[in-house]
Image (cartoon, rainbow, N blue to C red; front, side, top):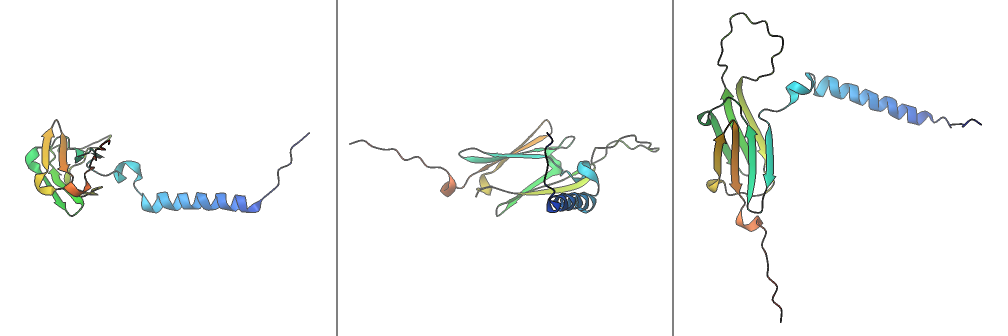
Length: 146
C-alpha cells in the first residue's frame, strides 16, 4: 500500500521564502565570505565571582602597540599590526594575515572598576582582568541556627 501525502502549497512557499532570505543575507550582509567578516582580534570573555576577564589574541604584536580603554560598560582595544617583511614582487597563493590598524569594542556583562583593571601580555595573548564593582559582586549570607 502506498502512502498519500497531502499537498500543502504554503509549505513550499515558506521553503522558497527561506531560500530567498538566505540568498539575500549571504549576498548583501556578508559579501566577502566568513573569513573576512570575522572580527579581529579574536576575543574570549568570561566572569569569575570577582572579575570579568577578557583575552584577546594579538599575534606578532608588542604590549606597547596596544591601547585599552573602558568607557561606561564598553571595553575598547586598539592597535596596529605592522607588516614586517617587504616583498617587492608579490605572487601570493594565500594571504590570511591581517595588517594595519584595528579597533574592537565589546560590551561588558556587568559593572566594573576600570581604575583597578590589570592587563598582561604574554605569547601574543592580551589578558585584561577587570574587577567587578562591589555592588554587583555576589554576597554570601551565613545562616545562624538558634
